[in-house]
Length: 248
Image (cartoon, rainbow, N blue to C red; front, top):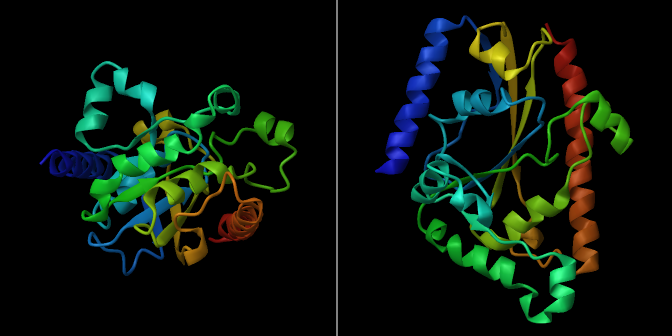
């Protein structure tokens, strides 16, 4: 019931944005999506406007987006209870220092998160994660010495944790790329109707079977293999952004 309420609320916000703001939406690759499938969604991250933009495009096409949240966030007033009620999966990550002091903690974070995700084996779900982990800024791009023109370096570990915890449930990745052709992309630009056009490209990628339920932390070969796969996706995304920015 709560998921249905959230879906209707997001849909209402989308209709309101369409009525109040004259945004031209150029959506590519959304054909064939279904509410009956399980998805992992990632996207390049430029501003907080990315989230309502993604919701606008995907809310009516796939299951409600859910984010993996740190266990401590369940205590955030009001929001923590809402996230819990909406079945957002909470994860508890142990640091290398904690594991060194207490070896019995090794693997427990994945086991606990996998148990929390057990319900998703029977109900289609969409797990969302920004692979860059933070918004792109010139300062961050420079400090990372990013090899990409339009992107920060991807953080493969967070995505690997999701695939490890979800086991065999997630087979399909929606690789979403957002471009704001006229430059303005801030959340206030979005809310105030100053964004004229948003281009959203969706690539449907099958997640290789060898990465489902993998042991990313302890298997060096698997870790290197997964990082190569993610790096290849990011190289293609960077080239795609170049192409989309040149498109009329």
